[in-house]
Amino acid sequence: MNYFPPPPPDCGTCGAPASIKTPERTKATTVLTFSGMVKKLEGAARTIEVSGIGMNMTLVLNDETKITRAENGSVLSDIEEGMNAFIEYKAEDDKMIATAVKVVAPGAKNKKKRAGPPKELLKR
Image 1 (cartoon, helix red, strand yellow):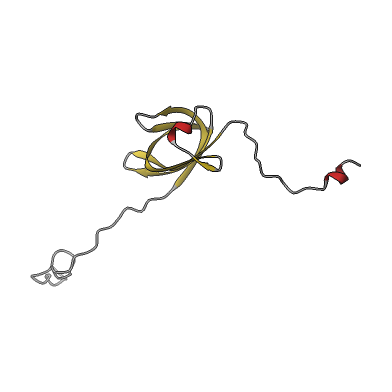
Image 2 (tube, rainbow, N blue to C red):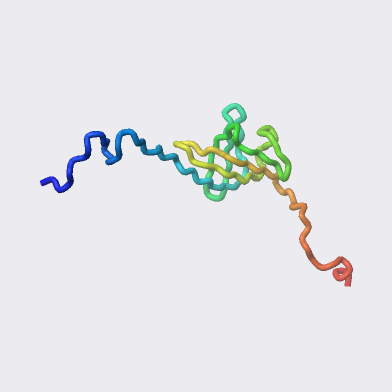
């Protein structure tokens, strides 16, 4: 037994008139983060391999990827193996696309001074 009335003749499967189109859904992209040491950089393939705690990740760099070295803007050629990398990325299909890459030389010290007692008090 059919408990539902048949759809009107101008209706598709959704119940709306054929003249009204439903909007297409867009993929929601979540930005993820990863940090570690740069193990390999392939400029021709535009990929970077980063080794973090317990895992390695290969990410694709594209024209929209923002690359910075410390506080300055940089380019792909400024990245060197052994640098520490902090990466924001999104997963698209089967690839990890880097949206932002910040690299810091290993052992680089933070230039910001922390507030503390005056030097006169430390000499006592």
